[in-house]
Amino acid sequence: MKETKKDIVVGTTVAGQPIYITCYTIDSEKPGKTFYLQGGIHGGEITLHMIREIYNEVKKHIVAGKVKFIPFVNPMGWAQKSYAYTVGKFSNKTGEDFNRTYGKATLNSSTAALSKEILKECEDVAAAIDLHTAHTSFPHTITMSENNLELAKLANIEYNRLCFGSEEYKATLAGQLSLKNIPNFTIECGSHDDINEEYKIDVVKGVLNVIGSFGIIDSVPQQNKKRQVGFSKSVSYFAECGGIVDFKKQLGENFKKGDTLFTIMPANLQEKEIEVKAEFDGIVFRFAKTHIYDSYDEVMRVFNLSDLKSI
Figure (spheres, rainbow, N blue to C red):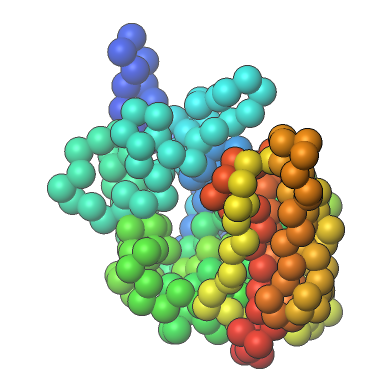
């Protein structure tokens, strides 16, 4: 077994210093498939603790082929900070979403240069997984092609977003790899800027199970088989005025039609609090880690139970 580390230059600073991403490879030095795993395309998406554990397990159990890891695939996004918070979803220079520039040959920017190098690293792989986090949320997979659904199900994650043929995600890594017929899917590993031990265990076991399905490692963690459901949409609730939000339902909590999801306390002390009620039976899918909202901000995203289908 051999470990290697390769720095890939994706640009330079005004002072002439290189901007690079680092790819780590564990090579069994035996014939087999190549698997690719990345994280951190958006600054603040904390997946390093999962990638480190997967790396160490692969190192102990690899028997064929190789696995490539890029834990921080976007150093530019991670360098964007406001006060104590990393704000690297969109480029401060171009306004581009760092995960919406793959395959855009006419785009001439640092984000496009970054995505081109990542796609080069994926040219020889048998499969790939892209790790992300979202607002306050629980793990779910995203698949761009129906052909990849069975692969995603091997991760044994309960919720699975089905974005088959989505134009919205065409310029993501997942979208471009799907167009190239490279098996892949995305895992939203949980809440943004957060470490959750339960979610970590689920994601690590799931990724190792997928890698094991290619015969690359000889030890696959045992998992209790979960119910797996698919969804193609979620429903957003927005603030009808600015104010302080008090959440009445929490992440993963089921609610009934007519239940109060959250209230909004307006600044005008002569106005009553606004109650926002559920329009159907559902589950709280995600919300942002704040109680402070302007009018028209998305406050909460939910599933309609009738939209969830067993897969």
